[in-house]
Image 1 (tube, rainbow, N blue to C red):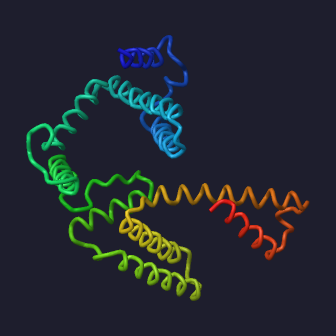
Image 2 (image 1 turned 135 degrees about the horizontal axis):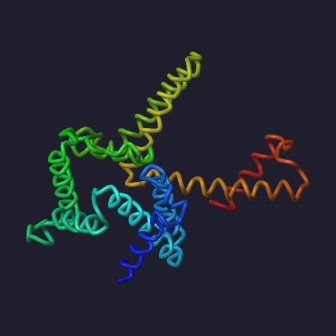
Image 3 (image 1 turned 180 degrees about the vertical axis):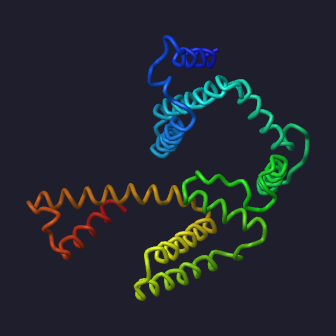
Length: 260
């Protein structure tokens, strides 16, 4: 099988005598950033609709799984097969409507059942019984904020509609303005700005928008628009640092029209 070939390659790379010096230097901590990077590259290929790239990036991500499993095997903790068994067991456990003939009415009921099963698993693992227990600290801040808000909402702590978080944004923005006007220290400014961002994430959740995706696409639009502005300035022979605000505003409006 193809997966056996990958695992054999992984063993060769980590061979203490004939392996790769770089691979031999790695541990869980040093590999973790590469794992995150490969996951984002998978997401990027999906965003671009590039299935050829997606195939390659999924292979890179699978290699990361094999790498972590090899490290764990060397520590006598678990092997790749144990990872596969664990995910198979988890999927079957969390889909009783498929594998154990437990009826569910629709996708919404399945989502509620899924969260109930996950909560039970967290309790069994000693991860706490609170609604917010077990949300990884290493998640990107926007994604973690969304999960925190959704978990709290599932427990009954939420606004009835998007009007609530929208009003909260105005409230938090007013508090931030007040702190700015009062000239308070950076820690207070950071706290108020954080509250504002958290409120924006809650609004995104109510609008069924993934804030991480929304910000990533906003970044892409900014890059395109700024490149358009740079090209327009270059055509006029003007350095961006010397262009006046009126011209910059004019060109930015044109860039937004070109890249909506």
